[in-house]
Amino acid sequence: MGKKMGRRVLSSLTITAMTVVALLASTGCGMSENTPAGESKSTVQNVARTKSETDILRTNMISEPDSLDPWKSAASDTSAVMQNVFEGLLRYDTDAKILPGLAQSWNLSDDRLTYTFQLNKGVKFHNDHDLTAEDVVYTYQHLAGLDGNKAVAVRYSQIAAVKAINDYEVAITLKKPSAQFPALAAMGMILPKGYDKQAEHPIGTGPYKFVSYTPGQKIVLAKNEAYFDQTRAAKIPKVEIHVIHDQATVISALQSGQLDLARLMSFNSLDVLNKDFNIMKSPSNMVQLLGLNNSVTPLNKLEVRQAINYAIDKKAVIDGVFSGFATELHSNFSPVMKEYYNERLDAYYPYDPEKAKDLLQKAGLLNGFTLNIKVPSNYTMHMDAAQIIAEQLSAVGIKAKIIPVEWATWLEEVNSKANYEATVISLTGKLDPADVLGRFSTSYKRNFTKFRNKEFDELIDRASTESDNEKRVEMYRECQEILAKEAGSVFICDPNIVMAVRKDIQGYKFYPVSFLDLAAISYAGK
Image (cartoon, rainbow, N blue to C red; front, top):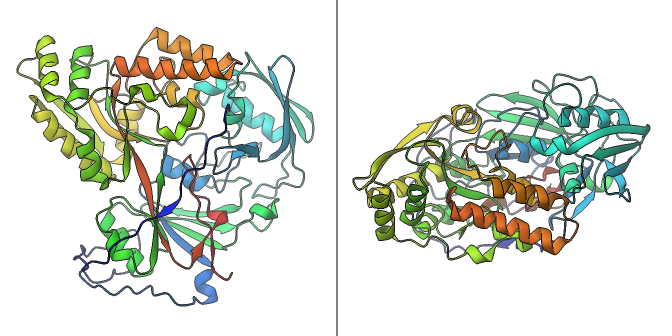
């Protein structure tokens, strides 16, 4: 992985107590009636909880799961939760260091082509099936498309062969050396051979077992009592993850004691939670962008894409949507990526509406044009950002029309089919720079921006086999420069993850990837 990335700061915000603002009275997600609007006294209170109350943890997710099957899911919200059910051969810690997972150790052959993993013994899937090398072979043959199907993702197509050496040792051979393969081994979730009902009832090896999913309401998980690693075993017997689409309902549910911790979708009501909750924030290693479809007219013109970049005041978006809790970006990398992040791009595309107008005139669009922006309606931060962006585009003559769509529709029309002109969305953080950049490669099937650049593609390929870390880092930085110069999209910011966590809850951790580590969480005194 190159140099180890530094720990991201976990900090509590000091919030000045203010008069409680009236909250929208609303109910949803299968929860009971909310605290009345305008009521300032929280019903949570800082008192000792009964045993039954400490046997359950209730939290939220913003969007519906796109698929419970980890081989089919592409949504960060889903992944963050379901990584408690599924595990890979390796895993990340909070410092982005790669650690043993289902594999207790691994080694690399002298020719740098074959990784051999030694599995932990005594690991059981949630259906009581023993984990063996055959399950790893089954998993990676499917991921790589070696079972007759297409590879689940392009990054797995680098695998040439998978072989069980014995019951607890497996060899994975690559087509060419890849310095980033351990990162991939932390992402490939191992599934039991012969079980084909993952989309209905997921079965993994993780510290939590799947119990149920009620669409529009919640996912329920239960502690895996047979988990193989007691140092990482779950502490709370039951977890409910409620699907909640709006901030008012989240705030109300926290105040009334119906949620114990929650990710906040906007940051303008934090003062009302100060009494009973710690408000924690961290960079998310996520990139919010105005995604541009490079294949449609007039976005297929470089001058038009550059004009849009100059027309966007990113600071206004950060202040208006995130109350300043975000890092301005000029690349598709967050500074969380440390050495890979290209700081040379920090001054790229400053806010300059006059230059935007000049570029539009150069492109033959003196009178502007209409731009349709499809936005997933369940994400408040994207809808709010789209409103600000639309106003800024209007100032340079671009008539932006916001088209709210359901999350499932966005996944189908934008992410899968690229049937759109522009969109506001966030790309989930990855720790493998090839994965981050690969989203814009020609061969990536979900490259919804339709960015195409031969030099960009070749640099990614060369970097993946480069053994000299300094050279590899520079190649990835050059890729970012190409993407910026070609104005593939407008990279806006890395929004902070802001969490409200009950003051009697301990162990919550931030990770540089999308992961809600439920097993680490406990109630004080438990």
